[in-house]
Image (cartoon, rainbow, N blue to C red; front, side, top):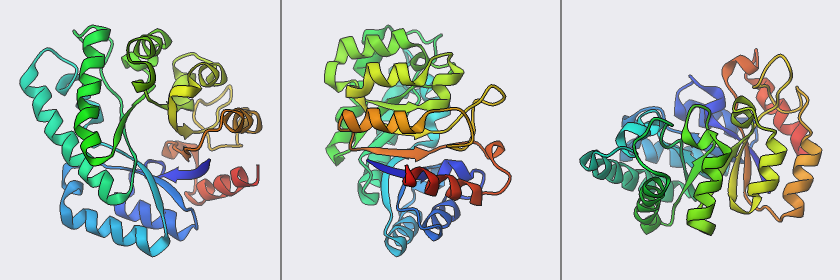
Amino acid sequence: MKIGVSTASLYPLETELALEKIGEAGVKTTEIFFNCESELKPSFVDMLLDIKKDYGLDITAIHPTLSLAESFMIFSEYERRFYESLQKFTRYSEVARELGAKYIILHGGKPNGLTTDEEYCEKFMALNRETQKNGVTVLQENVVRYRSGDIEFLRSMKDILGDDAQFCFDIKQAIRCGYNPIDLVNEFIENIKHFHISDHSLASDCLLPLNGNFDFKGFFEILKYNNFGGACNIEVYKNAYKNPDEIFVSHKKLLSI
């Protein structure tokens, strides 16, 4: 199990500067959240690769900037948009392969989408077939106000796809959806390949780890018991801290657990 920091935690700092700051802080595991299409250009990816090599970073996953449009672009009845999206995911998988990332994180469709659960899963697997040509797997993230924010939908994906239902689990999103994160982890641990971690309290649903009430020791014990070998990346919003250096203090404390 690896513990790292997502570049999303430093947003709106530019992607390459966020990656460099993570490297400078001595963090070795990270995830890159792309914030615009121009960041997929070969010259930009080469710059990210240079930063990765300079600091010996392990980039575990990437997060497309397409996430806000996935419901419209992928999970609708308009097939032409879907095939355009496949091309975009082809490029993301090429970038992921170059960076050494195994996963692409998907927000997916919204509850008002016209596709059935079966049709949703068909499109999810079509994305995977495309990205797996580059050795990269698409993970469905649990996200509030998306279909994946509903535990019954996650159960449906698991029933339909079995082991092919692979998830990125986000603690703060589970809280925002009204679920106990530990309950969801226990239920879906065999399908979870990647984690976005954060803390929470009665006052806030998104805090830096160890600044709230979440039982990280118990959480890590569950992952260890289930032989989880993936990454847990800190992903918080900028209102979770006053100084970005607090992120790296939190990261060091987690390593001590």
